[in-house]
Image (cartoon, rainbow, N blue to C red; front, side):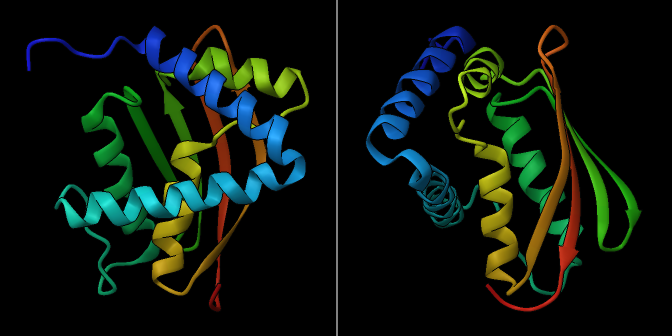
Length: 155
């Protein structure tokens, strides 16, 4: 296929879908977007685009998801800076949906948190949960930062 989807177009699609989901589901939008991440991971796995492996450490599986998202052009780069085996800073650069996500956050609405929800789904497959803190963003740099802590136990 010769044409690629432009990031601006994807950003508008993201805003439009998130806006509609927020209008219809309000606080349940977060749960809806989590399910979207789970379905995306299922489909990407079926197509052989990403592999979640129980023999790898949880953060290594998150790195697998990060490389997949980079390969699609959804983000230019995702850096996972390990603080320990169960804690890391996840920094996202060149996020294609920056404008829409920032606009939604400023409007007090829920963005898709697409990468985050796919990563949470990957951990869920391993019977693991994660806690996210210190979510920050720099709109001009198209950069987002999350602090992840891997928790034991199942979903």
